[in-house]
Image (cartoon, rainbow, N blue to C red; front, side, top):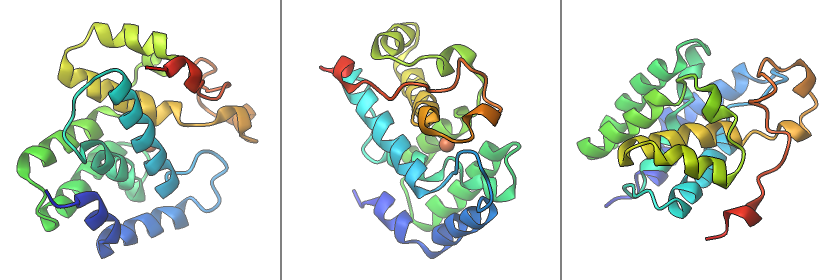
Length: 182
Ligand SMILES: [Fe+2]
């Protein structure tokens, strides 16, 4: 299979969307939605899926992570819907296999679904317990949305006091990789 994530990162339209988002968020004091965030989400979600033994197609998490917030170029409200529109357009251009496109869209679609319990999960034990209640497909969706939240480093953020996230959602401790040992 071609490396679609690499093709996407080199794609001119994708690069324009990323630059446009960076420009829009230039003065933003809260979390940015930039390439660093996308790669962090992909890394944490892939790692959590591996240790929780949740199978997934190669490239699925990376493509979804690179595209999930890109719709913010049209504003933050309903950005998942806008991200899906852009993701479909770009994946069509790159000839991403249709079944993979569908799975990418599923992950993007679910990442903004509000779930206070999921956002409050900070440790491996809590994540593993929450996954027990879900089937295989939903587990990956859950892990992806969880990682999108958990990568934020509120404990080191100067704007944490003014942030609109509630206290249970904020990450006031770094991820403790020790407790994630296989
Ligand atoms: Fe995100």
